[in-house]
Image (cartoon, rainbow, N blue to C red; front, top):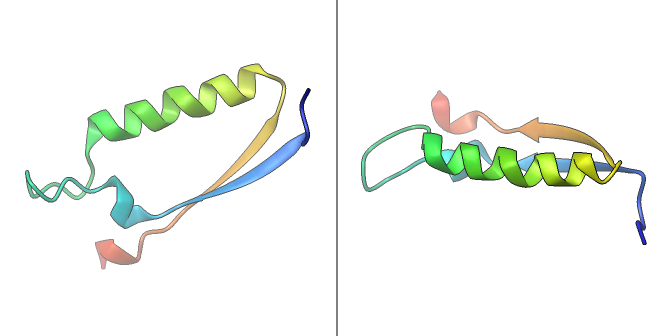
Amino acid sequence: MIKYKRILIKLSGEGFANKEKHLAIDNELVKKIALQLKEIVNRGIEVSIVIGGGNFW
């Protein structure tokens, strides 16, 4: 049973980083997150996403 019809997800921009490879954005991690979000959307839940970007400045 779905508890919420709509959700807001806040993702930290810093959380996308791969510090071992010194990358601001780890593409593999972003892909994993996108696939998980797709599963949520496929269940009929509306998703809003806020992505922080303070670490880019």
